[in-house]
Image 1: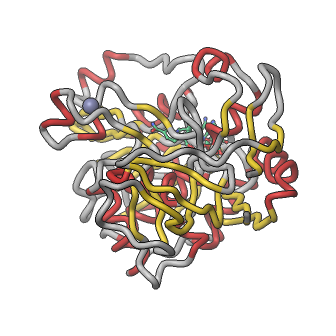
Image 2: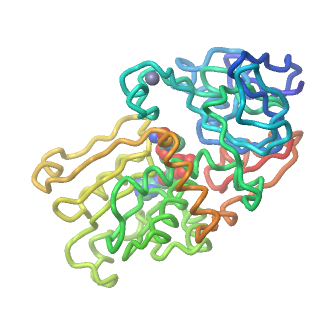
Length: 340
Ligand code: NAD
Ligand code: ZN
């Protein structure tokens, strides 16, 4: 089969012929229909420090996908050939304390599809049946193909009760915009998103995020009175991975505010910890999606009030993958969905 392979320990990604993955008794073989490019795939493409120490080469990349069941092992009873599915890209061990307690997202032994084991940028993907998620008929393929990052946004946004709360989202990348839209859907009072990239701010505005702030030009404290906010934000969703954004957030929070942190800071988040202490903030780190509560809630949201289709800025055939990676590497695209 053809697959996008991180074939060499240098920047780039290559289309190669590789064997169709073999399945064990517990595995499902999925014929891939659409995949989307994640920021993680861009790190792997760029071959930055994180990728160099994490990803063994050669590696079939990719973990955002939708497809149909093509085959399954002898122990698989729940799935039918041809059934439309996506899947959870974190493979957990099933025997650590958290796994045994039903908290798979907290597994200490998580392996990433397309990072630590062969991924979805191929004609076929094999994953354990536990990771497969059936897709209802009324959910379009291209939306199911971005469930992985939408799940990040949903997991982060639903970490705290948002009803009637003022919510600040730092970073209007695809995940930040989705997080802001989720907050609006579930009944937040004010939702404000910040970025420093005008293209991203315009995308957030186009998708209907209530209040969009250019953090390179305006200070949150200066615009809050005009929004009817006198005290500070109740909930923060950190989706930028940028230390200045996290510092802005801490300054703009009310005392006792709650912050869920998804953004990964390549050079670390340097903050004034005394502000966290004297403001009595609650901080919660987020990794991946809750298995599988996030998936249930996300599917219900897209079947209901949540429309994220406008976030897909590029729909391309797989042979144009370079165009897709170039768009993602520009830092100004929305989601790039590739048809197989
Ligand atoms: P992205 O890089 O597309 O978006 C980040 C945005 O933050 C960019 O638009 C950037 O311009 C903006 N930004 C930079 N400096 C800023 C500042 N000072 N103030 C406000 N905004 C600023 O990323 P994404 O794909 O939307 O993902 C969001 C973050 O979540 C990234 O850091 C990513 O690495 C991380 N992530 C974490 C997990 C996890 O499981 N924890 C999973 C996926 C992604
Ligand atoms: Zn485990």
